[in-house]
Image (cartoon, rainbow, N blue to C red):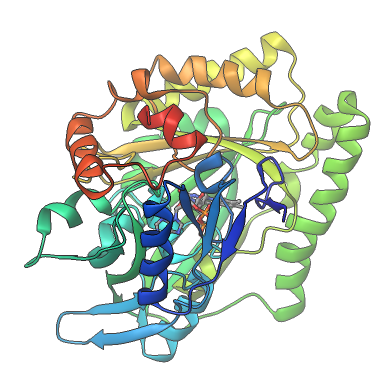
Length: 429
Ligand SMILES: Cc1cc2nc3c(=O)[nH]c(=O)nc-3n(C[C@H](O)[C@H](O)[C@H](O)COP(=O)(O)OP(=O)(O)OC[C@H]3O[C@@H](n4cnc5c(N)ncnc54)[C@H](O)[C@@H]3O)c2cc1C
């Protein structure tokens, strides 16, 4: 059977695809594969652009391990099946008066898939999704169930929060939650110079700030999301559909297709984007953070110390102009708090993330290699789920606790049951 990821740039032909109904059957799949020397990969929603989830041997889907198992209102945590899609979790939590403190810009990923690659949103005072993990259960490379929380195996929890699918098959996660909250979203086009000149104020002055530089223009679209105690004032239904689903997906998709056919028209098409206007609305947090993504693309995103954001973006802009790349997607810049997870892209530093996108079907590698060369000069760490060209030799120098990760992998999966091409490249095995 053929499997492809969301973007269609990764293809797998697994020997077998398993859909275990519970943790015990998943453990049995791993045990039997390990005894036969076969390789196992758990796949979430296939939303990684890298080959992180690719398996040509045993592929395991964890769709059956879904839903809320328990809620601890005193501790403000929720325990969920690892295969729960974030959009479903958001709905279930909302019905309980609860929410996740932050999210990325989509909610199609599974809980385990998202935390495994250090998925993040934006907001300089809040970390990526893995920082919300308080406990987990996983099946190790021999098929044994390992419990990891503050009391039991805290050293496993410490590392396995961002495991890139290489430490075990996660079956359950306990996550911190907060009471539901409303975000007011202000979306304002600004000149890029003004954004970069006032970046510190914009980043520190908003709960969740991000911006998109529109290539071939001097414009950026800024998004400033802040908590409010007022009742939600969402966009009227039809206007919301027109502006979000139609303009950001259907019309934008048509513009991208036109740009793929006639790349030289891209700068003129781009000039139409900044005028798409200013708007303010508010809604429950999960409806503001995440939105539909119907236009498919390839993406690279890398994390750097926050002060590198403005110089790195200026270098990318100059490189795009010098080399004449025709880009029909905005370049996205986000921010997160520092954390202590060994393989988190924000490990030990308050971080800025720069992401570049190329419309599906268009050549992306030369452009992304040029971007990576610039970001390398700013000590940037690639997102584990987004296109990059680094290997273990280089990555090991970017993470001060790399050896802790390698030691944990050797302890949980000494024979490399969870290996694939990607782990060979990024971890050397
Ligand atoms: C349109 C789009 C928007 C995105 N937006 C953001 C964003 O805003 N912020 C951001 O940081 N990233 C973003 N991403 C990247 C995405 O969040 C990550 O690639 C994430 O890992 C995808 O989750 P998934 O469930 O699809 O996992 P997959 O891609 O299927 O798997 C990712 C990794 O997790 C492992 N894995 C999955 N489930 C398990 C399990 N149960 N146990 C052990 N390992 C497991 C896999 O083996 C693999 O190594 C985006 C991607 C797309 C396509």
